[in-house]
Structures are given as structure tokens and as C-alpha cells.
Image (tube, rainbow, N blue to C red):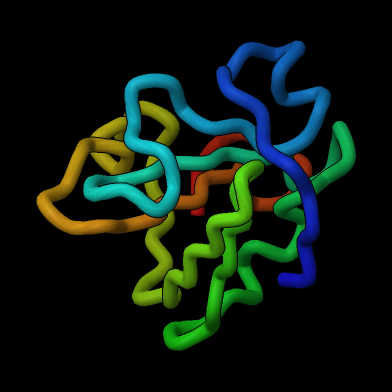
Length: 111
């Protein structure tokens, strides 16, 4: 996907203007559970512009502020409705969920 951004905590409109955001209440990357991060595809730095190009097996590498490096592998891509908040539910294992609107320029679904 080629994105290289720092993420911020929170999912407000103002938070999303700064780039990718970490969903409050989900674990941080590198910990057990479902760390969830959202980003825009066409506005506000468009960090997830090419999220649809991720394929199973692609590496997603997250660096934290204290030097931790966490390597996730893409397993599947789902397109869901904005009301399908279960995609950020916690999991018993370390997982990363990335969300963005789809199709580009529309908020009708999330890939």
C-alpha cells in the first residue's frame, strides 16, 4: 500500500484530519487482541488510498514510539457496511484491522 504515517489516538473528524487513527478501546499494535486503525482514502492526507491493493500475505509493519516493530500479515479483505462495527471487536490473538471508506470518495462501505 506504500503508506508511511504516524497514527493518532481517537476517531473524531479532527483526529482523522491528521492521518490514520487508532480506535480507542482497541488494543495497541503489538499486544494481544484486535488493534484497529482507520484512515481516509481520498482526503486528509489519504493514508489508506490504496488499501484495496493489499493482498493476502502482504506485510503490514507498525513501528511504535519506543522502538517496537510489529509485523502483521494481511489475511483477508472484507467489504462491510459502516454499521458493521464487529470488525473492530477484540480477538484472543494479536490481530490488526485497517478500515477505510470504499469505493474511493464514498462512505457507503468499508474495505
